Length: 377
Image 1 (tube, helix red, strand yellow):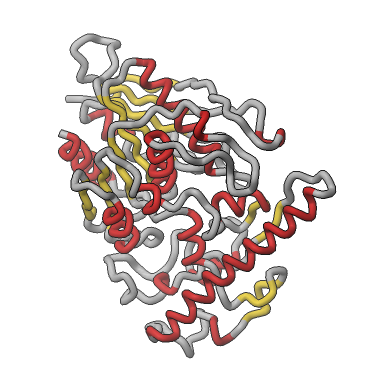
Image 2 (image 1 turned 90 degrees about the vertical axis):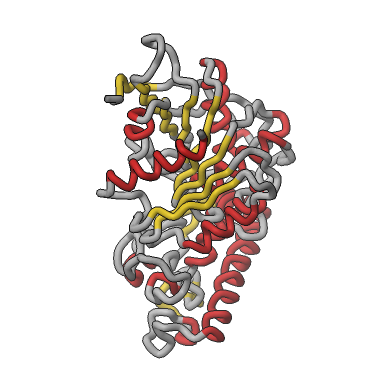
C-alpha cells in the first residue's frame, strides 16, 4: 500500500525582479511542505510528477489533497506566498514571483512534470502564473509599483488544475459587495432599494431587480477604485507610499440566499456563516486592504488576476474541478474558467456533494485526486 513516506520543509529562495517602489523590495520568506510518494524505483529518488498547490494567502501546508496525492504515487508540495495569513497588502504580481521560485526549485530538483493546482483563490493565481510564464507582458502592478514579470524567471508548468476556484479575487468580491451601503464609513447607512436582506426583494429575487443589483455592485467597485487612485496620487505627493482602509459589506451575493440562482447542491449561507453576519464581520474576504493592494487584487478595472482572461493565453492542459455543494465558488464560475481555455486539452469535472475545501469529506478528496491523476494519464 502506498503511504506518505516523509514530510519535510521545502526551503526555496525568493527570486528578485525589478520593482518600482522600495516598500515592495527586499527579502520575502516562503514556506512549503513536501509529501513524498513511497512508489519509487530507487529509495530517495524523486517521483516523476509533482503537484504544487497554491493560493495567494491561505495556509495550505496541511492541504486536504497532499496525502491522497502522495499515496497515489506522486509527490505533492503545498506552498505559501509571502502573504501567508494576511492579504491586506497583497500584490498578485509578487505572488507570481513566489510561485515561480517554487517551480524553479522543483525543476532544479529534477522533476519531469510539474502540475500547478490552484485551489479557490489559487485558481486565478495559477492562471496568471502560467500566462506570464508562457508570454510575460506585465511590467508592474496596477498601482504603479511591484515587480516587472517580463524580467522574472518564471518556468512554465506542464498542466493546470483549478479546484473549487472562482474567476479571480476582483470578480468574486464584485459579486459579493453589498451595493446597499451608501456611506463607505457606515455600513448601516443603507439604500433599501438595493438591500438583498430586505424580504421585500426576496428570495427568490426578481430578474430585473437582480440586474440592477449586479450593476450597482460593479459601480461600487468602480467608485472604490476611483477613490483609491485619487488617494494614492494625493499621498504620493507627500512621500507616503500606501495607506490601509476598510471595505464594509463584502458578503452579499444573492446566491447565498436564493438557491435558484446558479443552482447546485449547496445549502443557503456562506463559508463564514449566515450572510447578514458574514457580510459585516471583520474576518470576511477583502474587509481590510490598502490602496495599492486594492488596485492589484480587488479592482475590476485594473487587476491582472482575472482567470478567464489569463487562461485565453495558456497552451498547457487545464482541468477545472468544482464541488456541487460549494457555498463560495459556483458552477458558473467553473464553466467560465473552462470555456475560456482556447484549446481542446481541457476538462470540466463536478465532484458531487463536494464542499469548498472538501472539509470532512476524505473520500471526495481521494476522488478528486484520482480524477486528476486519471486525466494526467
